[in-house]
Amino acid sequence: MAQDITADKTREKAAVLARQGVVGLTVAWADNNGITRSRTVPIEQLEAAAERGVGVTTLFAVFDTHDGITFGHAGLSTPSGDVRLVPVVDRIVRLAGQPEFAWAPGRQIAADGSPWPYDQRSALERQVARAAERGLAFRAGYELEFHLSLAEPRGDGGTALALEGPAYGPRALLEVDGFAARLLRDLRDNGVEIGQLHAEYGPAQFELSLAAADPVTAADRQLLARQTIHAAARAHGLRASFSPLVSAAGVGNGWHLHTSVSRDGVNLLSGGDGPHGLTPEGAAYLAGILRDLPAVTAITAPSIPSLHRLRPGYFSSAYAFWGVENREAALRFVPATGLLGAAHANVELKPSDASANPYLALAAVIAAGLAGIADGLTPPAPVQENPGAWTEEEREKEGIRLLPTTPEERQAALVGSETLREALGADLLGAFAAVREADRAWAEGKELDEVLAAHLWRY
Ligand code: GLU
Ligand code: MG
Image (tube, helix red, strand yellow):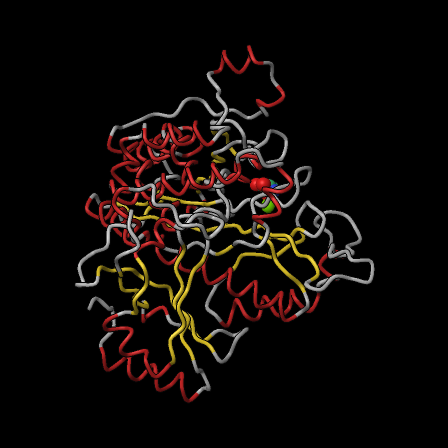
C-alpha cells in the first residue's frame, strides 16, 4: 500500500491520537462538483484503513451537485462496484475545532490496489510528476471568499448577519470577533498557514488567503480549510456559504487560484528580460493557460452558479484576457517587486470557485501551462482596462472574448481541448461531463433564485 510513512509510524500515530482523546479519523475527498465527501473510521482502525482503505461506491465519480447519481457515463452506468478510500497518513491532523476527530485527505484506489482512473488527487499528482520530468515545479495558493450568516433564525425569521460599517472595515470583523479569533487559532493548529483574513466587499462576506505550497499540499489544505471554517462558524452560531454566488444581485465568492512555476528553484515569472520580468518560459506558462482558458474554466468554475458569478465589473472576470495587476482580468499577473522579491510573482486565475474540485482545478491549470511551455507560446500584450466597459467593436478589434456563458459552451470548450482531455483521461473526463450534464438538466427551467438557494450549503 502506497503510504509515505511506515506501518510502525502509522501505529504510533494512531496511539498518540487515541491518547489525546481522538475517537475517529475523517477521511475526506472532493467530488467532481467540488463537494467534500467523507468516511469516518474509529481511530483504532486507522492502521487497517491506511493499509487497505475503506470501501466506497464507484458511483461517487458520477454524483451530481444535488446528490443525484447520473448513469449517463458509460464507464459507471450500473450500481455495482466498490473502490477503496485510503487516508493519506502523513497528512493526518487532529482537528483543532473538533478535538475528538482527526482528519486526512483521501485517495481512491481500485479494489485490487491498482490506480482508479476517477481519482482526482492522482490526476494532479500525474501533472506534478510530468512537470518534474521536465525540471519544472509549481507553487499554488487559494484565496477563499465566503459569506457568513446566522445558523439560527432571529425572532423576525431572518438569518442575515447584522453587519455594520464599510467594506473591508474592522467593524464587520468585530461582529464576528469570536469566530475570527477561533478561525485564526484553529487554522494555525491544523497546520493551514494563511496570509491574511479580512471582511470582503459584500455584506457579511469574508476572505482568507492560504499560503502558497506545492500543488497537492495546496489542494489538501483547501479541503482542510473548508472543514476548519465550517467548524469555527458552527462554534459561534454562524454558517458559512462558499457558494460561487449566494444571491443574484450580490458579489460572488471567488476562490482565486494563484500559481507560479519554477526551474531549479528559480521562479520563471520573474527576473527575465521579457515584459514585467517574465522569462520566456514564464511567459509561455501564462500564454498556455490563456490559450486554454475556456476549457480550464470548465473545470475551475464548473457549476451553474459559477456561470452567473462571472460578470464584468465584479472583479470576478468575464472575458478571457490577461493583465498586469488588473482585477478584471481572468488571468491577473502579479509581478515580483524589489520589496516582495521573486517568489511573489504569480498568475492569479479569477474564474475559479468552491464548486471546483481543487485537485482537478490545479491539474487543469498546470496541464495548460505546461502545454504552453512545450509549445513555446508568447502571450499577447496585457490589457490594463475593463473590456466590459468597451463596445462590442472594441472588444472584437482586440480579440477579447467572453468566457463560456452556458453549460453547452463550457462543455464544448472542455472536450475541444486536447491538453485537458489528456490531463483528465477519458474515464474521468466522461464522468465529469456526465455530472455537468446532470446539473444542467436539474437547473433547466428553474428560476435563478431557486438554483442559487439549492447551492448555498453544498460546499
Ligand atoms: N468577489 C470577487 C469574485 O467573485 C473577487 C473580488 C476580489 O477581487 O477580491 O471573484
Ligand atoms: Mg477577494
